[in-house]
Image 1 (tube, rainbow, N blue to C red):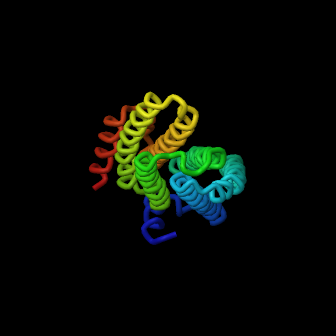
Image 2 (cartoon, helix red, strand yellow):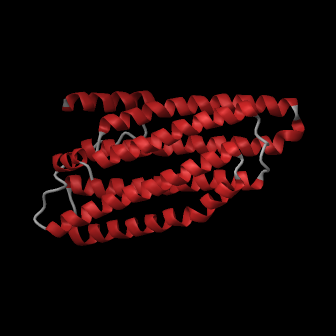
Image 3 (cartoon, helix red, strand yellow):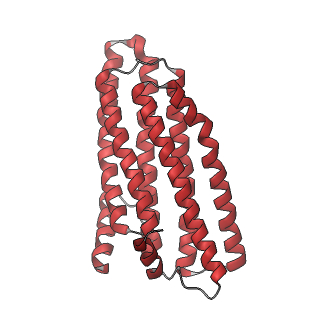
Length: 251
């Protein structure tokens, strides 16, 4: 872990316990989350490249490696359960464990969406996607990959300001999804024979949009970890206002 991450851990009193073993257990869990995040990030990157290039071999690789994400989710979940049972954590320690459990669920689902995109690629022959739609999907994929990269960094550093950037980026992803959907609906109206293939592309875009939502969820968990407030069901505007106000009060 980098220096910034260690300092933020100390701010949350996550690094000071009577039992050094408890410290080690919490640190081990956080490191495994980041390890899982790294695998998910790799899976997502390969799925997007496979989608825009029509690379069935790369897509098959994503499908084959999905089990690695699932194994880590179970392993981390079991470790969190043991910590709760043995240590009965309170305050910031309990919030960390809860944030970890929720985060790995969203990371596993990002892995599932990446696999879903890969399956679409292996099912459809290369070249089905038109050049303009391919470019739009690539741009949307770049936005989502950057969101995932940023939120994993935010989790490592326990950084609310970085989490705010992810929530803001999700608005761009939503707008891109709406744009692609309109474009694909126009194509279906022009050529009904292409509807099955276009629907597959639409579902791939939907998977990217959902990945953006999952990243936003993790941003909310980080805010909860730091501030102890649950903002999951606020509107995006109210959520951003709440996060900004909390960030300003800490300056």
